[in-house]
Image (cartoon, rainbow, N blue to C red; front, side, top):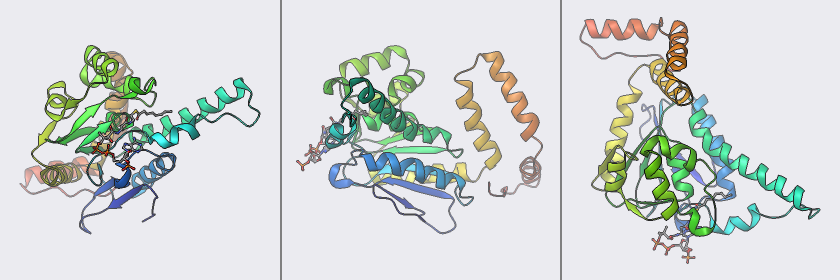
Length: 275
Ligand SMILES: CC/C=C\C=C\CC(=O)SCCNC(=O)CCNC(=O)[C@H](O)C(C)(C)COP(=O)(O)OP(=O)(O)OC[C@H]1O[C@@H](n2cnc3c(N)ncnc32)[C@H](O)[C@@H]1OP(=O)(O)O
């Protein structure tokens, strides 16, 4: 397994196809540094390509899930181009922002489901990260803030684009304009997280169990469901139905279908080949 400056990857048991991708700068509260934006897409791509991996659980080491962008990196991000020309400096900054956006979008480009397990703070860039994830759970101590306006920034790594379809336009607008803190309970009421667990250890244990459950299902059906749901966001109902008809005309008739039906008929657990 490759090693990363800002991340750790753990497979808790050798036969498990659930891999834990952990934000691992606990002394900086997992603030997102420039290294993170290099490490993260690389790690996701390697997990995506690894047939032993079926589901990825994203969590944070230490006291908090993520304290947002590393404030110390903001000066480097906004450094002017060598020439000092305003146009070239703006173009360089645009390229940097696009590359950071691509690092977050890597979650969606990963075929395998990515589940966020959030404890403590999830702020600014942390929300960019979790809104790109496929499922979100948190512990009772979790709190959230779309903090960018307080730093005189328009959130630019995906929150403003992804959050409205998760919590609705009005809630996204209120949270992003006020930058107010909200609790895990409120996140659940808003639909930002699917469930709140009593403690970080319960969160880790129960999310692993949920991930194992998904990992035991047909990998073709699981990755197909993720791909179709993500594409359907951008499509009309008619286009979405047309897309899934084409998808299933290519994918429906598989060994997985035969195995799932046979397991059901013989009342046993199905076993699927890796993807
Ligand atoms: C192109 C731009 C792209 C992306 C932009 C994204 C924008 C954002 O992400 S906006 C959000 C930025 N983040 C914040 O404003 C959060 C700031 N931190 C806090 O509010 C608190 O630290 C906390 C997360 C609520 C946790 O509080 P607590 O548990 O009391 O810890 P602290 O004592 O406050 O912090 C310990 C230690 O960590 C340092 N630190 C915290 N957050 C960051 C950060 N985001 N970047 C760098 N360092 C951070 C903090 O300064 C402390 O350091 P010491 O050296 O120990 O003083």
